[in-house]
Length: 344
Image 1 (cartoon, rainbow, N blue to C red):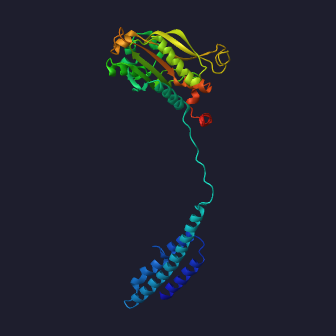
Image 2: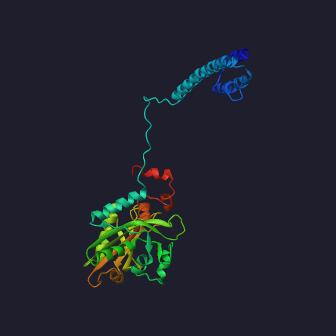
Image 3: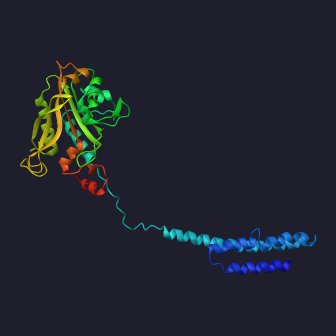
């Protein structure tokens, strides 16, 4: 048995000397030192030896195992070292190379226009007021002189959560909530930016969700001329000092009288072009004097106080400002579109 162990040792060492890969080394480890290997088989046969032979053969078997394990560990250390060197070489970073510039983002054009509108009105003494997007029917319609059976509601078909809770169709509810909060105190001079929702079919000029900014002024002796002067100053700061406005009679349930407000076309200077359909004017917003009923429901005596309100779609303002022809560009996240506003 001693000769068999010596032969096994020589065989193992010879095979290990020709190992060419980590996998071959693992295979030989299992072959010679595994539970089914020849060394284990020899050790299992030691029970048939005499008491004098067992310690001698046991010592030889341990020497053989130690010799094989020593070579395997040496080979394993070499493979581990080589693997580490290869990984470090592959992951090496040349710190002398120039850095890669990070891609610079830009403020979204709608956010840019909202900030600009807010800055203009804050400069005129307005404050910014906000309210919930999920709104009560009372604030969205009834307190704005739109009872449940009013036909004008059809123009603002919304997404309803319940019969009394809906996604707001306008930011006007913020005006009502502000009047209630102020409890008859004047002056009120606010703008209300935010998202609104309507069940419109999305196309080049309509979206089921869009941004809106409304304004409200309440005080004693507020007149239509104050409204006109405010809007004229706004459009001239937004589109340039040569911009003019035109007010056309219209109807809104929450204002009386009501007007549609147009601005002179910036593309042609009011001469008439394709953009303004040869009229020289572009519709920009709706406005009017606050309806007495709305004042009364907000806690203000319409015989003592008057006010004006206006509302504009931010997308419409941005489309006119930047010459954008399709509202959907604002929401498709196309980098080719957004990169145009990197330095605007």
